[in-house]
Length: 112
Image 1 (tube, helix red, strand yellow):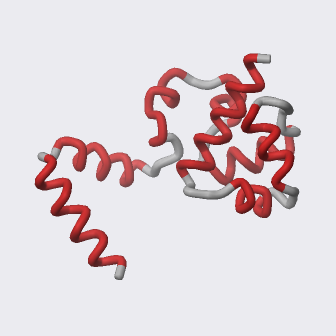
Image 2 (cartoon, helix red, strand yellow):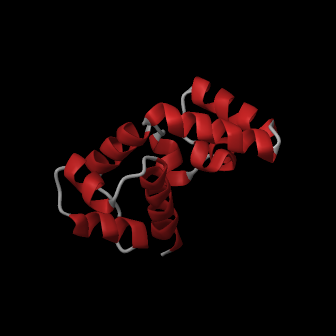
């Protein structure tokens, strides 16, 4: 069923945005990895309770999770970013490749 795959893709997108494994998401949802895998490949739907938790964890709306929303869908992996994070990303994208590389080096140095 197409809708199951679409919901699964959005769950996978949320998980990828958060840089979580299926195991990490499963732990946060107090379940095994098997249901997460089932959601993501489109075999099963999440329960309402699980969907609410996924939406909260990913900072996305239930509307987007279940039926998608054009504006949010256009943002791709930017879904759930804070306004500040979006501003930083938008500014970063306007920089030259050389400047982007320099910024990445600075950020990596600051994280050490």
